[in-house]
Every structure is written in C-alpha cells, then in structure tokens.
Image: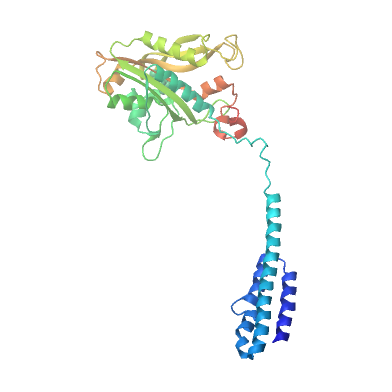
Length: 339
Ligand code: DAH
C-alpha cells in the first residue's frame, strides 16, 4: 500500500501539472479525491492493514490528500487569475471617449405640412376630422351635387372597387359625413390620403394627400372665405406672399374660386416652377352649394358656409423645393433624412 501511495502521488501531481483548464482540474480531483477516487478508496481500505502499519500509511495518505488539494487549488487560482486578466483586457473600456450618436428619425415632408396646417387651423378654432378612404358613391359624388352620370364626375379619375365603393378622390367626402352628424356652427379641417387613377410622373401621383376644410354657420360670406385663406397662406408661406382668387367651377360650391399664390420660387417674376406666369394654383374653394346643405338636412336660408381643398404633396414640394413628387413615396432614407 505504501508503494501504491507513492505511485498515486507521483501520477496525481504530474496530472495536476499537465492540466490546461479549470475543467481539467476537476477531472483530476474526481479521479483521486472524488467519492470513488483512487486516494479515497485507498483511505477507505486502510482497515485491512495491521494497526501499526495502518497508522503510518494513514497519516501519509492524509498528508497526500491535503497536498493534492492544495496543488489543485493553487493551479486553479493561477487559471482564474489568467482568465480574469484576459477578461480585463477584452472588456477594457475607455470611459473618457465621447458617446456614439444614435440616429433620430425625421418627419416625412407631407407629415410636416399636415402638422403645420393642423397648428394653423387649430389656432383659428377649427377641429380635425377623418373619414374612410374606401368611400361610397354617395359621399364622394352624389351628396356633393354630382348624381350618377353627371358629367362633372369626369374631373376625378376614379378607382372603382368591386364591392361598389370607390377609393375617395378627395377629402371633400368627409365634409358631407361631418355635416350629416353634427349641427353648426362648425369649423372643420380634414387632412387625408386620396386616390386618382392617374399615370404617375414628376408632378402626378395616384395616391396623394389633400386637406379640406369648411365653416358652416349663420351669415358666413365670401369675405370670410377670402380672409381665412389669405391668413392661412401667409402664415404657411410667409407674410410677403400674394394671394389671388380666380372664378372657377365645382359642383359642390357656388360661387367657386381657385386660389393662387405668388410663386414661392421666384417671388412672382416667373420661373419654371410657376410655368412663367408668377402664380401657383394651390386651392379650390367656394361657398357651399345650397343643394349640398339640403342634402345634409340644413336649410340654406338659415345657414351658409364656405369650403376649400388643397393638395398637400404639391404644397410640400413648393415649401421644401422638391422637384419630383415620386420621391414622397419611395421611402429612400437619403431623401427623407434631409427633413
Ligand atoms: N375636392 C376638390 C378637388 O379634389 C377640391 C375642392 C374644391 C375642395 C372646392 C373643396 C372646395 O372643399 O370647396 O379638386
């Protein structure tokens, strides 16, 4: 057994020496000191020896056990120190470096225009309203004084859905919906997406944005319409902008006017953007047609109102000096990040 002990000592210390990882050390520990380890078994079989021999060998075996445990611990500490150092090196951090900037998104130019106009109209006491984009024929056309087969419908190239609805061609349909539900006095604005069956090019989209607005109350006159739209355009585009009203026709207003502003690019001198005449056509407007008021249950002798509608994509193009409206729909970050 003494021989055996020597053998174990030599072998075990050699293994501890040669081990290359903490896990390897645990294997060595199990092999000698574990429940069925060689040294453990030897200690357990000491009772077989005569008493004097047992004392000597027992002491030696216990000494070896302690020695082995120490050797294992010492080596383990070495490993841990090594990995800790490695870890420190790997995870080293220069806390004096400036932080990395994270990217903040920006608002789409059309969204910005909607927000600006929302602020302007809210400050004038208007409420925002919304309506469905898939609209019935009645609200998109008929209630706006365009019965089926009315030739004026030709002015709007319409997407017809198979379920009898249309993709709304203007946000004016929501004017009707609000007027059906609520009693005057009303001041409402309606930003939203509208659809036109249209070949797309630098100035035309088939999905575009409009903002309609209207006021209905007693004694609303054309001068209210003029004053309102002049103020809105000057707040939006600058005090020096000139506004001009041109007679026009819409089935749902009488009289009707188109509203031009002096060209924001050239200041009215004439350039490519305004086609050379110094004016940009921005809005349709007019006094709400008596028949439209009747359609929503109002008596035109008692109530009157004005309405207007503008294209937001065109407005955003002018305000942000963009020359191709298709950029709005591409989602190209190089374009969008500029705003
Ligand atoms: N709905 C018209 C269009 O799409 C614009 C418009 C004109 C709206 C006159 C109105 C209005 O509310 O009164 O071209």
